[in-house]
Length: 285
Image (cartoon, rainbow, N blue to C red):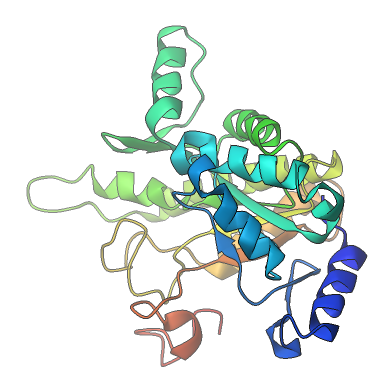
């Protein structure tokens, strides 16, 4: 796993060697990271050399998910970090995500259902994609990710859990979607707290350093499903309240929810230039 001091020393060396400029060094959950990371969506074994070259060029943060290429993305990362970069593993920050069920994982969920050992609280928001953040599912997926990565990830994010609201909207009538009620909101954040408690336990067991969400919070232009971000939005204040409650449930005063990943690109700049409909504030303001 990554080490705070090792990442700091590695980035300082890269700056000293003029490989990266000092202003590009960032902090992520306490680790020192490069300003650019490697996003491994659609990166599998055939793209292994691209990851190697990025790491050789000074990048030290890698983003993936348990469902990217049905797990092949994590397997590719595991081979690179246990092979040519084995000695530098504590300088690399690996971020993975759990929550989606697609392809083989969705087929496994369907099989488990026929065998009376289904994962609870699966959210069926699309015919070809489901979602789950129940503790049983999270534990299973963390174990699978560790096996593919050949070690523990550093940061684990719940991958767009707000698809819970997408499913609620899909239950609407011919007159239109059914907006989430206050009861729906409360149920969502209750499930989120239980998921956080599971991740707090995993951190205590050395399975990760910190956790968080990959989400489209209030202020983002579009939702996780591509609609206007009105009914499917998450609220950072309630996310952090759930993290506080999870920490208290585990007998501590400080949680390990350290990362919120939000969309930020030329078409979705609200994270930094001012959110729509929120008096010109950025998402995090």
